[in-house]
Image 1 (tube, rainbow, N blue to C red):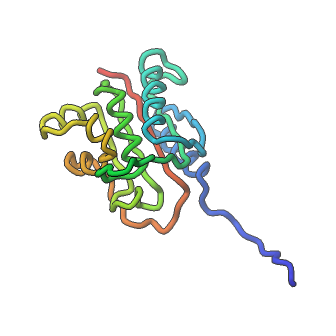
Image 2: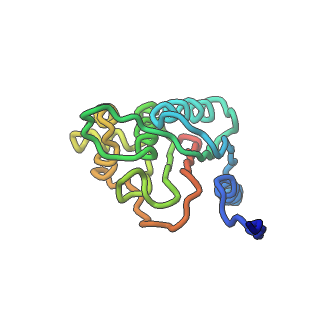
Length: 185
């Protein structure tokens, strides 16, 4: 058998996507905080943890003073129970959990998306949130906690026009998450 000895070059990796986002943030005067390109675990739990880091950034300037963007990648999971009726993927579940934990805190915005353009089995790559999400959800008569408990993040973000739809990107370097913390004012 002939040995396979081919040269190859990676054109995109999870870390490369985070570094590129960090460069964009720096050019915009925002301090990037890279939290890692291989974060795993339950999406909802990561949302709670990331809310804590964002609140610390806003209140205490740690791990960096605002304006700062918390960047992370990797692929989380969503454990679905039998009979859960909801729609959504790990990125929208992460964002919904983050939004519930933040309770509309001013100055914190976030984006989470799968770089292949498909979050789970839905037609969206992910979604974007801001401090106004709880009010917009309430005005529509929806319940963020109930949507999270039912794993129905897609429906909630669809109703609030918060989904990111890119179509297939024909590349995949895991999920991309950015939590922007700006001085509230």
